[in-house]
Image (cartoon, rainbow, N blue to C red; front, top):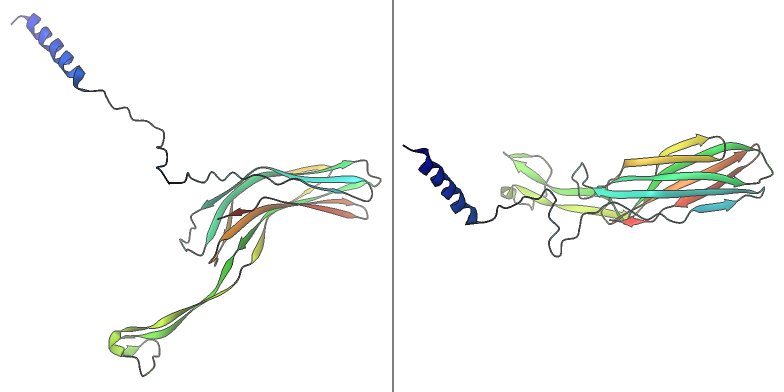
Length: 223
């Protein structure tokens, strides 16, 4: 057989398949959220204005925060009354000016305040269960044991509370200090209402006879 017709047939086959339709391209980028679906929380939060204080002996204390993040994550307990965050940021303390006393360094405390609108106090189970003729819990005589399970659940709530969660305390000498946090795990349990989170940083500047303190409180994030 001559090879010419075979090569011609193959060429025709390729040309015939080409117009069947364009090849679909698969993009590696995630699809945008559909209509009415909010985008995922990036965790980025704005920082509040710096905390500034001028001491009686002439020093200027400044504590600031930048690059703050507070990202809510699913609780490890899977409980609806648990709240968990991954938080971070850079917190800086500076002592400046021309004070009349000699500085001995100080400390920078960094942490988070987490609040709960309504706290779960306790859950009380009432009633009882009958299994195989043995009562696991006492039941009133008026309860039909044939039902198997009978009782009630009483949930006690109490006013919300605010917890101060200290992450670190940095001692320093000189006039400048810094703490950087990345994905620090913050959690609270027993929260039946909305939760709130904000950062704080407390700068203490010391001399031989004095301590001067200024605080920074970040923007409150509600979840």
